[in-house]
Image (cartoon, rainbow, N blue to C red; front, side, top):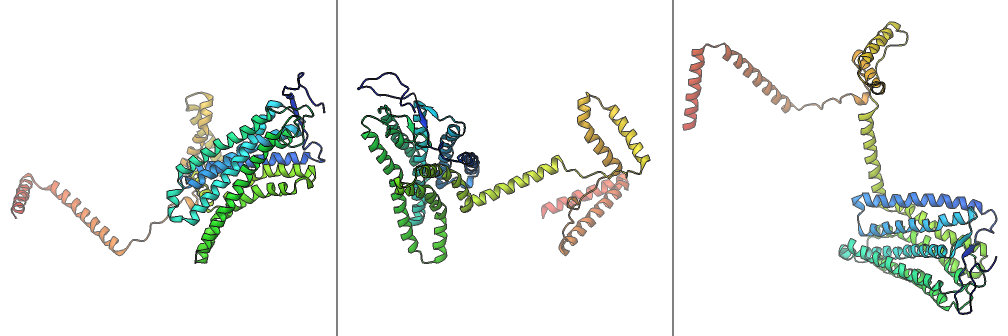
Length: 445
C-alpha cells in the first residue's frame, strides 16, 4: 500500500494521510459468513436493548435507581454496536476498506467512548448491589434515583474527556511510513504504532486508558464482591443467603461476559495468532451488547414479572378489541338446498341496497353490515357457549324472604291505588282529614 496521499512536507510538519486502509478481517478465509453473523447479531442487539429500554420507560414498577443504570447500559450497548458493527460490515463486506483520516478518528472516538461507558456502568451496578446487600436498611437513603443520575452524568463527561484526549494526541502524530491499520476498526493502538515521529504521549495514554477503563473497574468490582461475600457469610439463614446471592447473578454474568475475553486476549498478547486475535477482539466488542438484554430479561425476577404483566395486558386488549370490532356471532343462514329461501333473501337484499343513498363506495362500505343485520333479523345467530349469559348464583333463604316481602308490599300498594281511584269524593276528603289528624297526633308525641 502506498504510504501517503498527502501534500509535500518538511521535517517539522505533521504528515497526515488522506485515508487509512483497514485490513483486519479482509485476509481471513471464509470471512463472509462472519459478516452475516454480525448482521444477525446487530439486529438482535437493536431489538433486545430497545425492548429493555421500552420496558423500563413504560413500567413504573421498574423506575428504580438500579434500573436507571440498566437503562444506561442498554443505551450504551445500542449506541456502541451502532458505532462499530455497521462500519465493519460496510468496510469488509462491501469492500470499502479506505476511510478518511477524519472519519477514522470519529469512529475511534465513538467506539471507545461507548465501550468505556459500558465498563463504567457495570461498575455502577456493582456499587448498587454492594450497598443493597451490605447495608440494606440504608439502601433507599444512599442509592437514590438522583444520585445514580448524577453518577452516570459524571461518567459520561469523564469518558468523553479521556477518549477525546487520546484522539487529540493522535492528531499530533505524523504517518510517513504506512497507512494500513491491522485491525477490524480504527483502533487506537494500531494507529499510534504507525507514527514515524515521537509517539510516547500516545503510548502513555494507551496504557492509562487501559488502566482507567479496564483495570480500575475490575478492581472496584472485585472489591465490592469481596464486601458482598463477607456480608453474605454473616447471614445465618441459608435461604436468605441464597436469595441475596441470586440478586447478583445477572450482574456477575454481565461482568464475566464483558471483562473475561478482554483479560484473556490481553494475557495471551503476541502469542495468539493475528487472525485469531482480531476475531476474538471483534467478538469481545459485539457479543456483550446482544447478551446483556437476554441475561437481564431471563435472570431478573422484576423484568420477568413486568414482561408477564405486559403480555397479560396486551392479551386482554386484543380479546376486547376482537369482541368489539369483529368475531360477531355467525348468522343461521338457510341451507344451500333451500333455493326458495335464498331467492327471497336475494330479492330482499336487492331492494334494501337499491334504497340506500350515497356513492357506490359508501354503499360498498355498508354492504357487509346490511347483509349481517338482515340475516340476524330474519334467521338469527349462532350464540357460542362462552357468549351465553352465566346463570345467577343461588339465592340464600334470607334473600328469598326479603324479595317475597318486597313483592307482597308492592302488590298491596298497587291494590290500594286502585281502590283509592274508585272511592267517592266525600270518602276521599274524609280519608285526607283522617290522614292529617294522624300526622298531627304523631307530631305531638
